[in-house]
Image 1 (cartoon, rainbow, N blue to C red):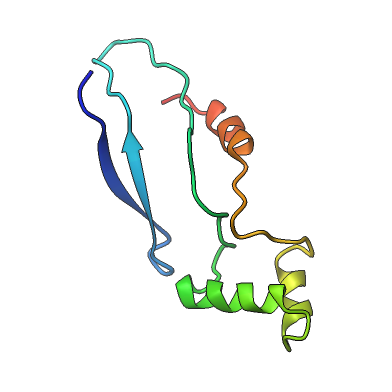
Image 2 (image 1 turned 90 degrees about the vertical axis):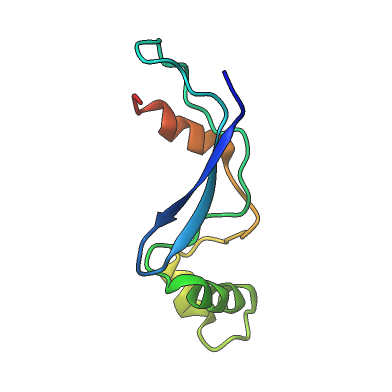
Length: 102
């Protein structure tokens, strides 16, 4: 076991979302893989094809302000649910990760 290593993961080359991933431990070849787990994350995931950072900022402005001209349309596009841009469901992330064998 050595120092942790980080890398940037780019998701959706059109919207260009960049994520900093930190690997805590790298096991030797042949070792039994441990449970893959997310320990921390920041901010909610934006909707697919939202238009990158400018589109996401417009979306947040629209859904957080009921007087915004596109408020209802943006809420409907987002599934009609309330949206907290700071909320991250670590348990949901880990349930999804548990389905994969790395």
